[in-house]
Image (cartoon, rainbow, N blue to C red):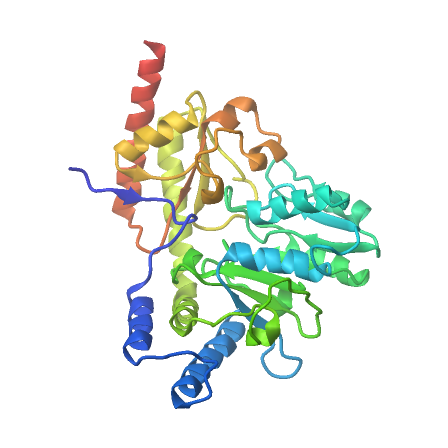
Length: 388
């Protein structure tokens, strides 16, 4: 029985031991409903709000004067939906113009599809061949009447980083809000909410070694947000429902761990990623690495082994003990070409053969070497079967 190698950290990351320990302490105490007025509730509320404040600090939000909000959600997808619909004034707001990139996560692109059906003008920004949003097109589309812009900070398939700070500055000149989905960047590279200049920013704990079941939306001080959920008065009624103290503590601990390791974590991951790509390219000359010439996340490699079918290769690699993906986990199982690859203008053969490999904190040099060997051996076997 071969040992499996997990290279799908963009789909989800495992809990770090220190995160699990911090959450277990919450359950053992126990920390109960933070909305309750008795001592048990007040104790839970203090821990909850301390976590909220620390998360804001670690992500570069203002937590003193002109305090920015940290709104806890159940996932990154919920945070994105809360931002998109909340910043435009609700799902039933009168139609206007929304600008999103053509490479957004389904939680943004599907929201755009919904608004199109409601009569909105949804303009999708193109990207260049490296997967970077075209600023010239953005400048032509952006007007003072634009209601909202949404552009992800780092792409979940290619790892390509987007010029969000530049776009936010352009939006500020026209008083247009900009939301960014930072789920794939937080915990991999330094992120400062205030320095980016965005109106809102979303994240998901399970993308940065925190627990499943919690996301967050950072909202700039003074920003109006309309919510279409009803219930209690939690989180100023912007996201009603009882907050989970252990989950918020888990998210805070995961970010704290990143903060203490940030000097070494990104450099090590980038070194391992480059080694993996070099090994694959040397053994398979028809390799195409998507987004290679653009600034990228240090742990993400989108590789096309041209001449092979990505779905067949994915399944064969699973049998060989290498876990990877064909793209976003939210669209796993789809046989359709990746919208990201199509937006980049990739050749059809590249689209058909591209797989996403994403490394993580537990990944070792041995893992990388072994995984590369298995990928090449599997690719050659499939190629031989096709030729036969």
